[in-house]
Image 1 (tube, rainbow, N blue to C red):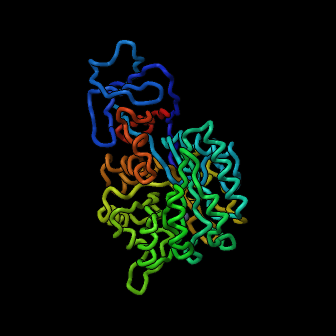
Image 2 (image 1 turned 90 degrees about the vertical axis):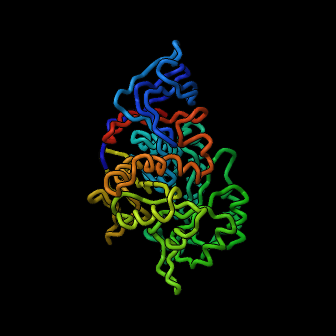
Image 3 (image 1 turned 60 degrees about the horizontal axis):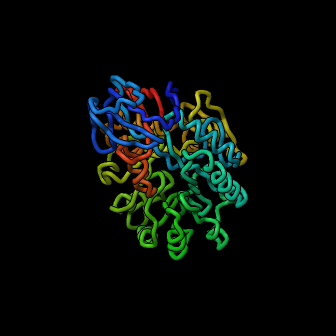
Length: 385
Ligand SMILES: [Zn+2]
């Protein structure tokens, strides 16, 4: 994890012009223009000669202005883990910690746990959202996972989805609720009901056969959680859930690009197989988004941070210690993905998967002005939320 000197700034209601930068709109690069912002929204992109006289101008010579990052899987950050501290204050602190590293919107993630922890986490994110609009909602990763591919999720807490759960998994107006589940543990009918009541369904921690995955997609599942990780052994036909995910043209896949979860060659193959449908998540744990990463507790286990990885006593990966900023740098510098495509993977594509691409993920008129300023070497200079 690399520290940044990015400063998180808030909008004012004054007309502001961000000038002299190269702007990435999410579609294309624009030079010699200014980004006009009012009331937290992008008003227009104009040539320097058309900047209104009453605008407060800020100059970003030699820098890149790009859309803020959107992270759909944040278990923790700033040395706080949501499952251990399911309170509104913790939610806000985690969002703030990631904000300093360029993640301007996120889904706080509650992993497999006792039902009361899941309920507390849901209540906490809802309360936190009232004053912290960076929190778009919640990602429930478990407890309805495949037992055999649970990773570090606690086996004792993995369970089928009950009628009571179904009532709980209903997003409020304006809230995103993403549920990672295993199709071998949740029926097609239940997936369909969840989808109909507004939850976004992603398949993960699964050993499902291709037929089971197709059935889940027909029922309304639209994504796959952390492609290649927690995705079972080959079935008799030789296909793993990851193979099936890559062949499902309309669905989305998240991927953890920290250099440990997915080998570089696999990442390259996946991006070639499914262009425009793979987005970055951090799967960040407590030690992410801080200059002082510390060990933390996961259930009754101590998770250590060693060489940038979160590992249990068996050396098993337990989430990551990165932010999306680290993933972006890894994607560009190690995997060799062009910067503009990487930026889409961190901002535009997740908003498309989450159904908020009309407001977030681009720097275009009418969009929320979540803006990051980078040096050409990808040093984060400022964050505007
Ligand atoms: Zn996971």
